[in-house]
Amino acid sequence: MTVLALDIGATKFAAGVVDPHYALQGVRRVVAASDDPWSACRDLLVTVAGDNEVSAVGIGSAGPVDVPAGVIRPLNLAAWRDGFPIVEHVRALFPDAVVRLAIDGVCLVLAEHRVGGLRGVDNGLALTVSSGVGGGIIADGRVVVGRTGNAGHIGHIVVPGDDTACPCGGFGCVEAVASGMSSVRWARARGWEGDNGVELAAAAHDGDPIALAALARAGTALGQAISSAAALLDVDRVVISGGFAHSGEPLWGPLRAAVARHSRLDFIRELTVELSTLSEGATLVGAGVLAVDALSN
Image 1 (cartoon, rainbow, N blue to C red):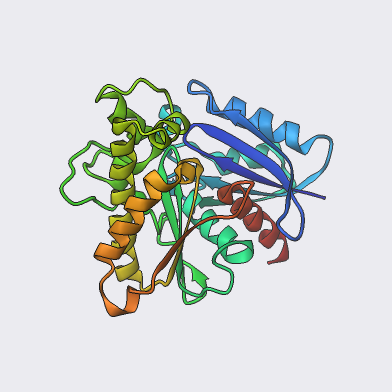
Image 2: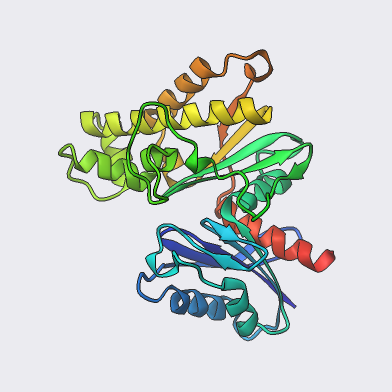
C-alpha cells in the first residue's frame, strides 16, 4: 500500500511517497499552472503513485483553508481563490485512500515536531518564508489547528508602521512585507533588475544596496512578527523553513536584531530562532505525517 504526500504551494506543487518513518521517496515538483491548477496537481499525483494502490494521501496547502469542508483558497492561485474542493478531487482520483488536509503551517509544525527542530519541544512555532509566509503552533505538546484549520497563520500578523497591500485584502501583513515575492517586488520598484528571491539574496551578498535594504526590511518584519507571536503563545523555540529563509546573513542579521529588540519579557528572553534542517521541504514532510497518522488512527 502506497502513502502519498502533497504540498500545494503558492507557485509550485510537490508530491512524494512516504514511508512509516515519515521519510520521502520519489519526490517530484511542478509549477502550479495558473489557468488549470488541478490538471498539474492530478498529473503530479498520478506520476508519483505509478501503478501502486494508494492507501492514504496527506495534503498540505497554502491558505486559507476550510478543513471540515475539504476546501482550499490559496491567495496566490487565482483559479482557486474562491475555493477548490481538493479533498473531493483527490478522493475521486484514489477512491480507496484516506485523505487528510491541513494548512501548510500545521504541516510545518507537524514535521518539525516529529523529525525536525522542534523534537522534544512542547511549545514552539514553525514558519515558512518562501513565496508566502505561513506558520504553525505546537502548544503543550499538541498541534493547534483552530476552528477552520487556519490557526498559526502568522503571515497575517500586521507589521508596525507598514501599509503595503496584501493579497488577503488587508495592509501591512508580514507576508506582504517579508515573503520572497514581496521583497522582489519592493526591490524592483526601487530599481533592482533581478527576477526572484534567489537572485535578490545573491545580490545582497554581493553588496547591492537595494537588495540589502530589501532583505533587511524582510528580516526586521519577520523578527517583529516572531516576537509578537512568541509573547502571545509563550513559546521557547522558532524554526524557519522555506526557500527565502536560506538568504543568509542579510536576512537573518536584521531578523535576530528585531527579535532581540522586541522579545524583552522575561519568559521569552531566551527565545531561540533557527533555520530548519528538513531538506525535502517541511510542508511536504508534514503532509506525509498527516497521511501516515491517518492510517494508524
